[in-house]
Length: 394
Ligand SMILES: *Cc1c(COP(=O)(O)O)cnc(C)c1O
Image 1 (cartoon, rainbow, N blue to C red):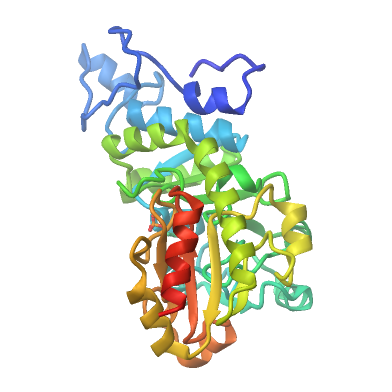
Image 2: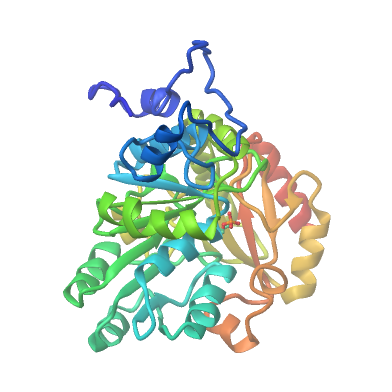
């Protein structure tokens, strides 16, 4: 694919990166809703399958609209290569499955998105992979866990829902000493607020369903990293197991990228304002926002991130009953386990996203019965605060 002029800055790349126009010279990216491609001759088909002639063969392998999305995201992440997937979980599973094999050891932080924890703790061990979970904020636990020889490290930072911050430079350096490949789930920070590859990670995964789409329309995911891995074992895995991104969803996500910097700036500024406002509210305890000075790792978050992101966690006095009453009293903010949408969304992790964990595991992760997770959307910040205020007073 043609490289953009090197002087293009980020907003320009988000709007124009990866654009390849068809012979019709359309303005907006073309949507190629096709599963297959045709050949002029049998010889041409033979050459395509012999890898002699790079071209589209089948949309499980590649599709022009999907390629435009991959290239735009690759430029944003400044990665060597990018492959898109049908969802964020497909990206996580494909990345880990393309690195690990039976007999390997995986070390992961315990504070993970529910499905990520299921893959790491339940599915991968069925294929002979040993999984070790650590408290991601405790460097000594990382040091101990990495002693035994480790093939891969998987972390999420900030974590869902308690916004734990992993010291990426430190953990990546320990992991590399142990010979492990580091995979970072960067969904909560988004590609704009944290650059895991610059902080030492080898591979970055996204659920594009969240801020990249940003308007709650479709699922998608991506894996980014060195071309030797992404276009090598990862591409082979994706090609043969089939979690291909639909061209339609790729088109929606391309349009999402065009406004990502504007939206993330607004989400982050509004969330920071709401966090500051919440911190002093009567009836609110343990307010967690990476950018707020009361976060136990605020200094580390400010070192690694360019903004605090859209998500806040806080506890309401009075446990589950009070938390449910608060959620039910909200009039503007919707109850939803999703996040990254233009709409503000709130969830009660203990009974939804993290309900499959045992009470002990939840306690260990700080997911109490009064904990609420709020994704701050693009509505006016005063309207968001007014809604929270009336529901807290209920
Ligand atoms: C949502 C999410 C995922 C999974 O993404 P899907 O697109 O829903 O499959 C993975 N990790 C994190 C941190 C998420 O928030």
